[in-house]
Image (cartoon, rainbow, N blue to C red):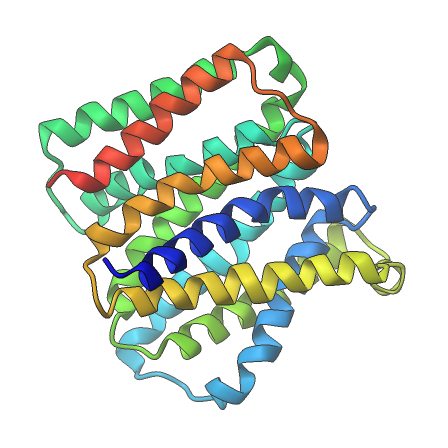
Length: 285
């Protein structure tokens, strides 16, 4: 692999890893979690409108596109923000998000009737064992609700990946624009009824939080995503996606730098098991 592509992979891993501590910084600035997820997707939509040009895809893609947009644009981001909002320690949430991979394989088996080999069953089992080890960490007594939302985020991401397989022939700007459209409006309505005072909350967001939300939309939701699809022009998904399992390393490291989170022995042990299992799940057939 050329050095240029290795740097792109590194950028993607760092971007995805940074998303969690950056989101926590915004939430710590009193921005409501559901509203933040909505604004992030709203920025994605605004940026992509010139490329989307309000084109409607063929009817055969609509159901899969709507399902993907709700899974990715609504469920993934709202559960991500809620998991971080209800977590004092965010490193376990970062590692817990890796469950999206075994969840995705299980979803593919049930929805697409794809075969799961005995080796994959073993690795899926160990991935869940690793998360259970993290759950038994005494420091996470007050983090169980956050970890529950992180599991829902991983499950939603898994379903989004299954639906995305039926959208390979669509332009990526169209897919992401629809994701932003559904995410922005649905989450804005949900925020209005659950969190309330939407206009007041938006007006109270300071410039630093707007910069961090923009970083999430531009660098993570658009930049890293588009660069991943760029690499798919040269390599198979199996060659590229294992690098996705490396982003928790950067996320946990950044959590230490920003919040001073020091991993415990149980967390390190569980994280190694989870990340190794997820990495190997992409390396075997």
